[in-house]
Image (tube, rainbow, N blue to C red):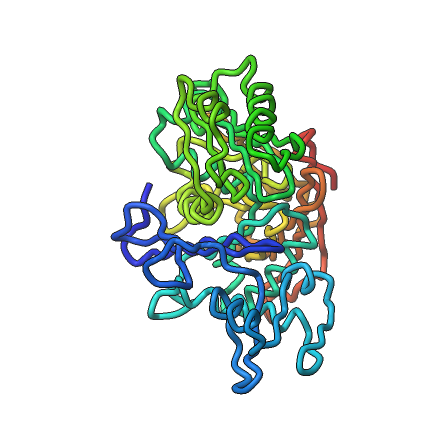
Length: 422
């Protein structure tokens, strides 16, 4: 699935040490990762800024690091971590690290933006080590300062970027389980992708992860230790592909371990899988209704919720929530006109791949109805912890003809048990 004309996706992988950025648009066969040095594949951009001592100009990437090394600039590193903790840093003067992180992100973004700027971006996807409600709030505020609207932003973790990258490749690579080993100097992290073996589409896909430990520095010992780690991860599994990412696998030390991971399966090595996977994830999310797979994790909406609506003479199902959305990003409001004397609202709840939906009725006791048999409501939808969905409905009335009653109804849906509480 590729971007359509005038669609433009940007994938940003950001962490304490490095940031990487890719773009994906019509005309590209795959996402393109950007480098701060033209003509090179130096994709890892230090999450840092350097202020030139004479000109006062901010630099980033290799130029910023070079200025700091020769003593011509004030260097501020680890900006994501410091901005998250709202630290103040002293260079030539005091600075808010949150403000510096915004400056850094603007500079990185310029590498991948279309000529029309942020407004022409279909989705900007941030790929992070983990996703929590607090982290989502932080990056939503950052995105707003960068010039994006809430609808343009997608926030996910590295597991989802791995998933999106893999399922966007030829299906022969993920017909069985897929393993990813990541080593950035702090030890080996293993991620295992498993696709549901069912005829139902979209197929649910999960990614589990486990920390395997640290590798020795000496090459021969390092190779032997990774043979043990990879062997345990592969044992008892049918794995169709293995991905090795991170600087920890560089240096030519993989002799016996490379033979092991390549035995009867495809193996790939690189550094920019998460940023490219973020671009793929943007396309998959936009066209989830046509996707063969759906990513399942603790921060995803598990089921879709629809209401039956009419536009002109055509009946259709309007989505309140769509399975696969990040529940921390769910916050929407709309207006609804109900026709008839019934004082209830029917919701159609459907799991991905299921042909049939179950119907849940929300009791709107005491709902004011106009002489024409209509009611006008505002509806807000939000998501909470552990799969809980909250709906709030409020009578809007009909202006001077029939003033709003002020009546409200609140309901909670536990998606785990699929029961409404009102």
